[in-house]
Length: 285
Image (cartoon, rainbow, N blue to C red):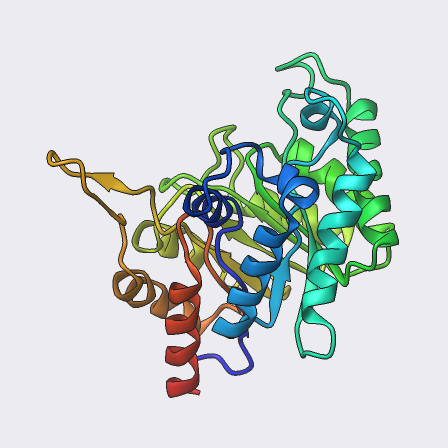
């Protein structure tokens, strides 16, 4: 096992929706909870910190101008600054950092869609400026499927002077659904000067690990791995179960601990998954 692996957090969105359901709150885009239910966001931050996460994401993933503008009474900068500040308050005095979470935009870039590169650049710059002003320690670009879009986001992110972790979502064939390869991604990110590269989302750890392994030997940048824990599976009797139990998730992530530098989980990965993963890391350190 590689030494000095940094334990990240798990899912933000699915866990916040679970907290909302448990408390009788409406299921809405989770960035809204920074304003309407900050107690949910605080609680999730605390749970990941208690589970051993050394870096947690601010609840800002899709809080860009395209999505926020669809709802009145919300402002991009306010939503993002609240998300970062909540996380910073919960990590105060602890050996835990906060990363601004930035995801892809809803529209496709030209020529596949109607959005220009300049429009995308402006939206990413707005998010990053707010997150930086609120005190984010780093920036995490995640769940991108279009190399051109993450290139724009990364160019804006490195201007902040903060560490930038860049992840794309790959299919099991080793390419994004837009056809971008691991090699294409690495080359672009190295040229821009990000701090680490890797993959998140889309696949569970058993299918994601072979793709993550493709990063080995192709870059000297640190590697980041945050696979999914899967969507809940509904049985005929109406009961639900996780696609991957915490034990299954950790077992399938373990091979990656020989070469990754940062590890956590994405959709469906609850704090219990992260806690168990951290225990395995400590046992094999």
